[in-house]
Image 1: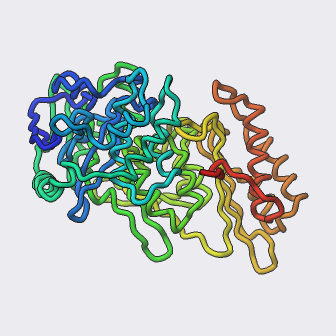
Image 2 (image 1 turned 60 degrees about the vertical axis):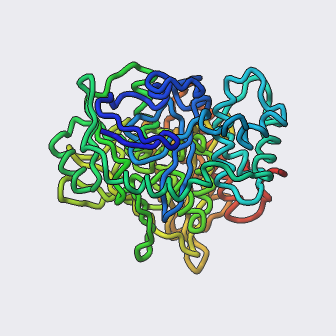
Image 3 (image 1 turned 30 degrees about the vertical axis):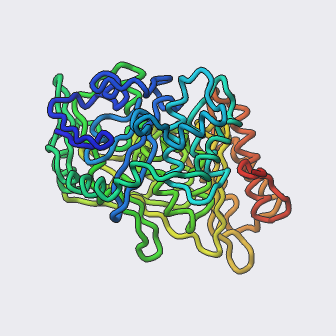
Length: 481
């Protein structure tokens, strides 16, 4: 059984198929048709809903794509849809802003925009244009255009009014805290089961006993097997309730990121420590995906175009892997074996990611090349870190790429060529030439092989320009609000 609040109504679902998405649950089981299906892949934002959870006695609100969120994610949370915003006959201030600014035309995408704006309003202090763009980047409008929607966002954030959610916050927190440890150890229907552990020990035991199960973290990729390929997942193990997997902390000279930490949470932790890494996360899919997707999932998925692995490879990160009661540490460079194949053993899972702190002698940068600024998959992602000695020679080099091979991979021969030498233009060009021997990228609908190789060289040249400070580089994120 799962229990959650649908706005302020306590819902208990005993027999429910874990393959059911929140979108289909709302439309079919609750007859709430305000939330729309546009793409069923988390790209358009028409299905956006808000999930509320408690943190240190306060409510925290996040948007998610309900089309790729399974119902198991609702346990112990508050689910808010567009139907919940209006009070009596009065529109919520966010809805009123959409009306005042003429921000809706056909209306199909409007509920998703409203929920993104509602969540932005809850999370924003002073108005920030860039933060609003981030909040709306996962919502697509095909007819109105974005200027009036951004105007509505500004009005909603600058003219906030007390609403029912703020008035009932104390009560909502109390009710959700009471639900956190409730719920059965599994949900099932139609022959499909989802196990719901709350500790890493329970997870290890369940996974050892059921190694054929699919681990469900954020599910932003796994859910596509159901929504896009009509696949049935007979047995999953949901990780959302395991607090240990979400812990992020500093230990000695390393940053420890729980494998179950969302990418939004990772951004908060890394913004002050490795700002360029955090900046790259703002280009990872959309806000809805970052709120749901996890760091461990992005690594374990083993996609050759995943955004975090190249950066973590350049930073010499390692993984803490657990199999029953045994925990081992494995360098990330040894984790990816071949296309979608990893070094994980049967019944073993990623527990945490350990990232060495970047010191003053190290210079880390990463760039992503894609067809869109946000909400797009990389054609090539390059991540680079060079450590120099007192004489200015390269003591250690780490050059990593995504989209250049069947796995995220370091350019080891380029690293060896540069080590022990100054980072001159001549040595840079030798390293660029070496990339042709290191990689044989493929051509696909995102980019041709020749384009990928040229981009990889140019990203390394860009890193050199950034390292030397010889050029004033314009970044994708540089614009005037």
